[in-house]
Image (cartoon, rainbow, N blue to C red; front, side, top):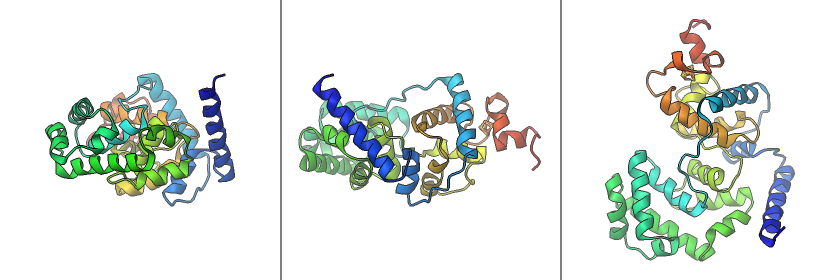
Length: 267
Ligand code: SF4
């Protein structure tokens, strides 16, 4: 085993010790804790959600959704993706990193040059300034290799650091932690929230931050990325906004809305 493997093992061991010390056997419980929610335990929803994940994985697999393994790229990717359509933010990200291939280059850029790259996605001066401010923070806090620093940090420290960056809220921080740093935390986006509510796990009509607070505590252990991924795909293909296609749905018997719509559950 080389030195890199050894140091990775050490970090993983430290992280799992932290989970044990903090009383959380898995980090979706930590997601709830970080969002100020008490863990209430219970097996019903985690068990049902496990079944839902298994069936949806059979249907769609568990594809990588274009996110980045590099946490620094992922931070900028998430910043650009907020309230923008997928095609547009992916194009904006490609253009931005073609022009400014690192956070160091971004930290030296001016607002107009960033806007030239991202305004095609409808993103303006505010987002450009955020990109520069985030890049400057990364340079001043961690120098040339912030990804290496983030990979050695413990979950609470990573969460606090990410949410201290301009424009990075809890959901964005959880995205970076889940996609790029391998933590079992669960970002709740609109697709995840919609399906969770239709299944009956959380109430409908919650504000987005409330759904982010409430849903992760029901997630089964160590399955956050699978859950997030299959819900994203299912939410785009079948459990779409407006009128869900329950007749085509492979989890309709497990879903409160599906059972209601098929008459298997009384209104
Ligand atoms: S049964 Fe309908 S509402 Fe429930 S998950 Fe499937 S598509 Fe969505």
